[in-house]
Length: 169
Image 1 (cartoon, rainbow, N blue to C red):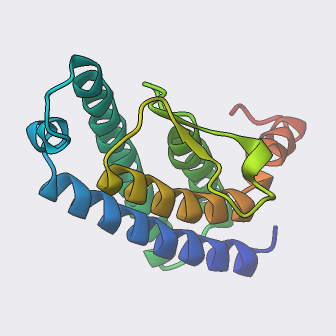
Image 2: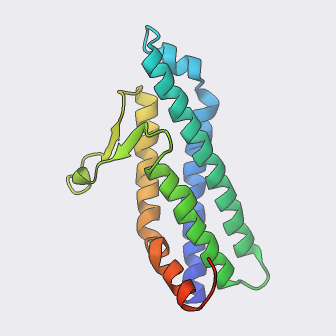
């Protein structure tokens, strides 16, 4: 990929990650486990586990998104833009952020590809969450779906290219 294309892609990914980071920070600063569990009225142990897992996944996603955001910033601030370094960061953005969103460790939600072309939300939850949890996840899914489309090249082609050049990845 041409250096200017990589630079533009880094800038675009950084803007989208900043938006996702802002939404996650706002949510995590406004909601605690107790608020989410007791917000539905009676405290259900299964819902407490669900929300605990959801908050854990969201915190991990936030950390990886912030780290990737900073790495892309470093790539863009260098006096001489190094496309190889930036491409490595874009690869990590795909595998650390996008995959972490669509395949969360605790599987509180999943993406159902059958809904992707119907205009309906493709996210399906393990348990029925509060409106705030659902809204955050749907908003993030739109951002990470755009990122996934932008960075689809880095899913496999980037690694194959590096291996063909004899580099260890």
